[in-house]
Every structure is written in C-alpha cells, then in structure tokens.
Amino acid sequence: MNNSYDNPGDLPAVLPVFPLRGSILLPRASLTLNVFEPRYLALVDYALANERLIGVVQPAGSTGSAESPQGKSFPIRSVGCVGRITSFNETDDGPLVISLTGISRFLVGDEATSDTPFRLFATNFKPYADDFISDLGEEDVDRVRLLATLRRYLEANGLNADWARINEAANEQLVNTLSILSPYGAEEKQALLEAASLKERAEALVALAEMELASRDDSSGTSLQ
Image (cartoon, one colour):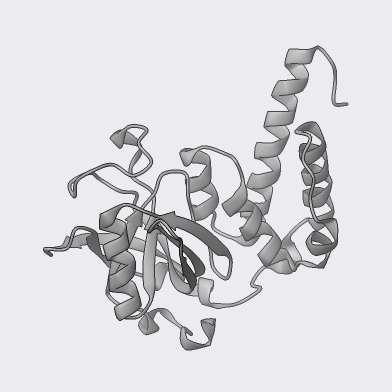
C-alpha cells in the first residue's frame, strides 16, 4: 500500500480530518473505525471519491471529554497521522466499518474554508519524512523487555493474546500496533504518537505498563521486586 507514498511530496497539502479522542494512527499500522455520525459518513464518502485519505487527529485537551466534539470550531492537536482506507463494510443498519492503514504523521496547519459538514486542514509532512522509511530503528527496540512487560501486563489484567502472531511480528509492527491498541488516555496516546523514534515509543509503552503495574502493586501491599 505504501509504495505509492515514498516521500512527503506524495501526499496532499490539505486533508479531511477525523477528530477522535483516545485514537491514534501510526505508519504501516491499522486502525478500525465504526463510522455512524452523518458528518463522518460524509467524510468517508469524500475520501472514497478522492484519494481515500483521512487524517486522524485527537481533539485538544481543552475541549472536554467528548470523543468527537460537535461543531467545526473546537481546537485539535498539532500532530496527527494520515491513513488510507484499505477496506470498508456497510452494516445492515447504516454505519460503516472502515480500516485505515497509516502512512505518515503530519503537523496540522490552518483550517481550510469549506461548506462540508466535516473539517479540512492544511498538512505539513516534512518534519516526519522518516515515517516513509519502513522498519527504521527496529534494531534499537529492546524487544525482550517489551514482550516481557506485555506478558506481565496481560496476565495482571486477565487478558489473552495470540503469542504466535506477536512473536512473528516485526518490531515496527509490534510497537505501533500496541500503541494504537493500548488502553491509555488521550495524553498518553498523544505522547506515543509524537515519540521521536520507534525506540522511544517502545520505551514509553514499557514505562506506561510498568507504572500501571506498580500502582496496582502498591495498592495491594505487595512488591514487584
């Protein structure tokens, strides 16, 4: 999929944006969205009729707790990620289920004037030119520590995982997918999105999991050591 997007110049200067709190997208990883609001059904129609591209950006922290605030005036975060619609399905009662595959992060610029029910923003992909390089920094990830922490976290939460698939996943796929699927809040998700390197993102994932495990341990009066 990414063969068509080799550098920042291959992506448009203006994108339709899906503002969604608690959701991030990262290069070459996937995000599944259930789309049911009329404004975002119109956004998907627009994307499908054009380049199938959607920018995923969280609303700014000052906008409250709504998953996607109403209106077209609320502020959004300064960094998002563009994804291409790689699959979509219509459900019997109207909503769409779409899958986005991430291409590159971008800096959010000025909002474009439009009469659409969704919002369009200028984009700047140049600061994230490295996002177009697949597997960059994989060798710097401490995979052993990441997987050990993941196992402890899953066990502590009574969760299962497909360890065969996890063990087969390359470091980039593993780190970026875990970042997208992680259950953390909007601020933590944004920090994972904006991490300067794959290594830093992996370290942030480990630190977040270890902090949660430690807080649970402290409350139970036992020790992780």
